[in-house]
Image (tube, rainbow, N blue to C red; front, side, top):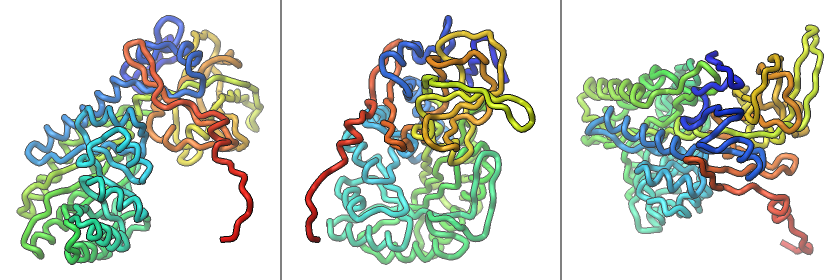
Length: 455
């Protein structure tokens, strides 16, 4: 698994400015003990230069691969967003994909240019749509026939012509190294190409004077490491672009292929290389367009996890440990940390796998079968189901779990009334808060006592 002598530090799953230096883990030049002492645990530690490097790498790869037909890299805010991170994204010159009014509010608080924002979501409220139209977002990705009517009506009321993309389901579901191609799609998102709903949506939009159809959008899955699923989806979308051209005697200018690019979570795994996968996608799109005698549209993508996921490490404090004898006669060490499913729900939701190391010291103790669990009142409150860790790990030790930048803090909850963790950025030996830790006062601030009233 590529382990070395420093508590099995595996650089392929940590951010680029992480190392095991001396006796403990260093993140961006800041050691784990100092970070925990200064900011508390659990703690999300984001490597700021690494984030910016990855965002820029996707931008440059898109521009190089789709030379002359490069659209925009839209960072998927759902992976993780804060006001400061939105500013980083703006500095990198890429776009921002938001799917709720809350995510849009963060972008606007960061003074993010509205012309580089697209609004997503399968059930946008009228307030969210109206806000997006008012601030002048680049595009709204329409997800249903009801939304066609809503966006058209609200745009007309605002006296604007709103640019829209239609989210299409291309009959592809892709996760990790597998994909499934189907004729009809049993999902909540978008318009099915196979059933004819997609073409009906095209005709509906064309009838609305307050809407301007710019192209199609597709998102086929997550944690994808190959282009096979993307290739099938692209071919089906391009065929619909050709049908549009033949019917309306004009070509739609844009195609958004979504995100879902995979990252390394475990030692020995590798993250998707932006240039490699986008070169392959460029070849597919250009070949399909040539087959239909179409000009290549502007192609956009939406990486979220692929940018922020590898940049962030969660630091936990160990609270208790205990040994449990299994039915097969073997033992398992349970290591309970001060977070859990409230700051990383992915293990419980998706059986996601993570890696961890002892972060505050070097141990030479034997490795034993271990399970890292949280502090919540759920048997499914597991951070890492199975991992070999040092047998002398005990209360007060620090554990570091890398690759937690995507869907960790963004999916965090207050289950058991546990305050959500802080987010700290590290860079060149210095650290700063991006998102402060919640307090019990924050939790209680939502409770109200008021007299009954007639409604």
